[in-house]
Image 1: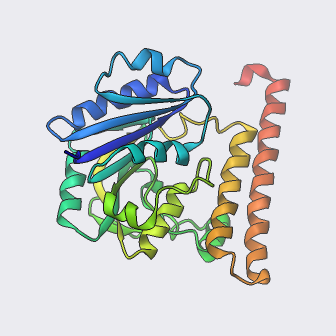
Image 2: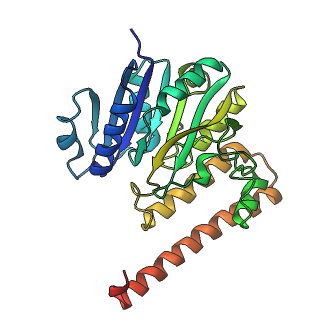
Image 3: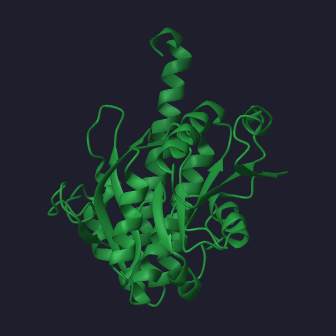
Length: 287
């Protein structure tokens, strides 16, 4: 018999964080008809060797290479047959009632294709990216100019459910029927942007995306080397992939400013990174 929910966690060199995450998932799924998949993207920190014996109920998939976030998630989704699929980051801690509360909401709202939750920072503050808007050309330009209220849907109350546009991939509960209709994660996205793309396809498919005031802690960025050149390349490449896929039909004069802004922000990020490394080289004691 198919499970009620399949939880999919993609890991890469985050053994300690993943251990804490799996402990929280074990508590949050007590009494639920659930299964957990960990897809490890060729970690070198002994993730699978250390954690597989500690979590015999978890299905570990050990990849021989880093195939990216989207493809790794799809590996586990294709092996599951549950009514719901939860995509969960390894740098999260799930509160005990969060998963059950999300499932109850989805059962009661048949048009909900996916739900996200209130992601808390280490300091316990709600993270703005818990609710996001589709980065249309206009919204993207506003965000790049520093006007982020529309992008983060700041008009919504934190303590009430509300319809949103983008569900964060850090905690993304999806209805299997919706996935069957709109398709799995787009594997053109190696990492970043795939949650925006999937959320947009859900909306275009007639489904609803929801935010729920149920909590997880998200140690944002601690599973990612954001100081690396690879991060900058992958992040801004994802922005370009999304723009070309969904807004490539726009006229040259409308699309050019967006593409220019993306390349400018990528160049600025690289310059800032080089500056930080140069300062560290000159003053190694500062870091």
